[in-house]
Length: 89
Image (cartoon, rainbow, N blue to C red; front, side, top):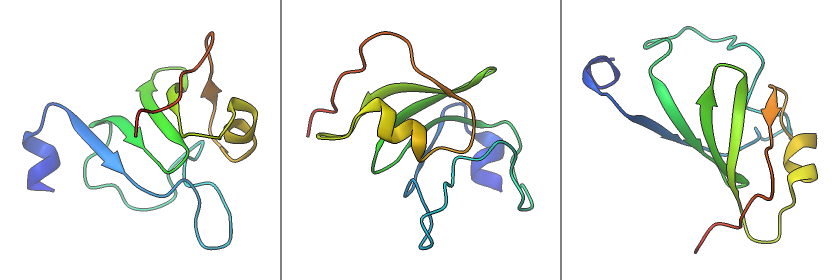
């Protein structure tokens, strides 16, 4: 909690889905929050996302993963604008 309270640019690294295959990028968080509204970017095994007022803005996608696959595996609103480049690995 202290970390997110004092940070200006919080980036979360996580798996895109849980063990049951359900999206972790949700419409609304259903767990207790320790730092609401502090996360600026999320990096998952499928892509890189900015947290925008209108949803998760897709910035980059993992190699071999298309935007349609990411959209199908994302519960929350996904914003895809233009051609999304692959991550450099």
